[in-house]
Image (cartoon, rainbow over all chains, first blue to last red):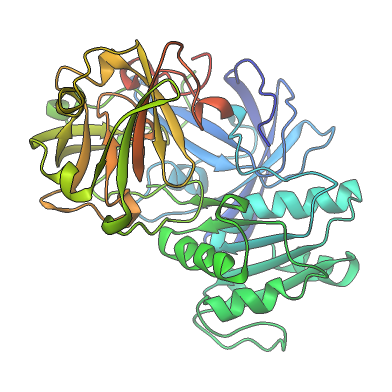
Length: 248
Length: 201
């Protein structure tokens, strides 16, 4: 469970090589590392922005891309209206700019590996980012671990990675996918048109061939509390439920 | 390296000497926890002091609440980069817990243990002489579950992962033994003014 960690994640300069609009409030930034690092799906990087007078702002962002030989990693960043760093990325950053980051960081919220029992993923909004890295990794590595994803979003058009997830639902064996839309009804029979609750989590967990061995939950604190309590009620052990909650 | 086009939201100079490098101010109190939020009934709560593997003294909720109370108002700094100023706490100073157990400087290091299996290491010198407490109240109110209620460690001069939520014991150790996050890449000491965020910072 505890990874062998690199001695120190050093700061490095990365070029923005592409920017993709994902949803009305979320853009993906593709960054080319100058020093490649090996990461595990679920980990994050720390980004550092420096003003001309030396003032420094730092934020952590989960990696959305999956571990591979590529030197390019993807960060999906939601624009927070009262934010300091995310508006910079959305309104100022351009392809060709250089961004400082270090990673990989985080030794807890980690894809458990090929021999594990089925994995239950529960996310809300941009909380799907580290879960997407896990799903993409599972696909690329052809690990046969069954995965179920329950993803909460306000509306259909705000579902991050929606088209890719729908395609994976069709093409990836042992991948169950359910949306919970909170501000509009869904048209898909397998989705839900309400906020997350214990019954919904049990329904999605039961779509796995056998009970999940672990769960990863990422979103706001209130969302994570409901989802984690629901996973406990379904029978998972507390230690098998790993959570990431949005900080400030 | 200066980031093209970035100016940032810089705080006024009167506060800047209270905000460690790389940190930004928040007004809310973010919740960051690695797992589900435990439910601990004070009726079942105990706090155990150990030296090595040996339990020295244990208190139940009412015994612990009868210990002398300390209040402190401190700035707190989370490794995820937020800082919050003037947070008010009330609880039992580690000095008073040691005194009640009849212990003086048992070993140079300690591990805090918690109901959810979490742990974190802190040197004895950072726990004593009024620097740290087991907090029972925040802003005059019983500590909410989300913030570690019924009781959390408070070591406000170190990054806040050291202020372990749902604490149920302190274990004194001869060596500096890594806790939960310290085993997972975070710094053994965690001084925000020296930006000791990750292992070799």
